[in-house]
Image 1 (cartoon, one colour):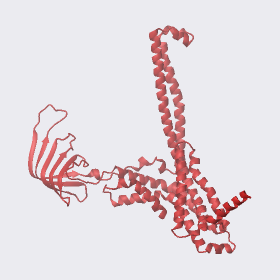
Image 2 (spheres, one colour):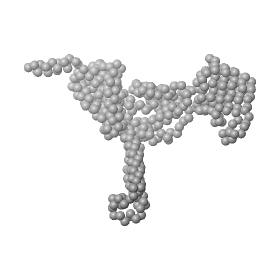
Image 3 (spheres, rainbow, N blue to C red):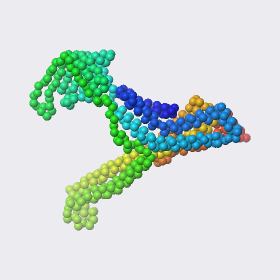
Image 4 (tube, rainbow, N blue to C red):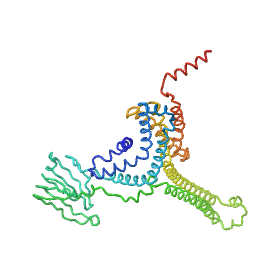
Length: 454
């Protein structure tokens, strides 16, 4: 839960601007936060394994329980064996979550987040400024009381007929409040005048009367349905690479690669046909030249005007072929980038799951070496190592996105780099080496210089 909370705060800092000031229901916010918390679980599990293993073995070493176990003849690997088994189970559970639960979670989270981003800001009418967020109306209130009910000098333009500023209502005072279901904003106006210009775009030349009506009291109901959050169909998001499991990702990759090969198979003949059909124009210039054996001899018999036509036709054909080829190249590059994203998402499910085992073999030996438990020193080391792992993984992922590295290499390099570190820490902990003893390193340096002096 600590790991999920730390990673969830990153989501909150990123999207807080989209959530504030929109009058969202608490149920919608709770739903978004719930799915956002679940979406970071695959990344939180390796961090949690690192922190928990470091705390566990740090506590054992700090209270000399690890020394007691070793003195009874148990090696460190024998002590770690049950937890290695548990780490393997955690790794398998993390993969199952990433492959089956995470796609559904991402679908719910991103669809809800999309709807929230499309949501209009909450009703916030300021004094002396035209407010245009209510569909079909533009209103300005010169003064609003502290309780947000009493109004002075009200001006309301009615645009519901889509004819421009043809209807205007002004009033000296009034009140406004929302209905209980918050579907309408009710505005009570007192001592005002309503202006209406009867005008039609289809018959603008015909003169029509201008209506001016004074009133003592008038009631307006402004529709606030535009402020209600509209839920988008989730099917629109199902093709995104983050909403698919491993089998679906492979199916999409195969389908896209097959489409690219088919497009290329159709593209080359179409380009050739476009060129050869344009060469028919040359033959149409001079029917008698069809008996000429070579193109050079045929071209030499053309007049200056005919040669100019041939040059222009050839140039236009080359330009069209070039534009068609560039368009097809851009299209294929976009499809290849999409394939890379799908491959990255596929290998991410495996690499993050395998990272659980690596983080255990880093955390457990490190805890036995530093001999500190609790939430102090272990948290610091966990954050440092996890940040290094995450930055490394993100760097190679970016390189894969650019096509510099194949996705299966880029997504695994972060884990591969930390495997030697895990092996080194495990060997040091097994040999009871004090990895953070500065004196031991100083003595090695001193011995080195003594040998050099001899």
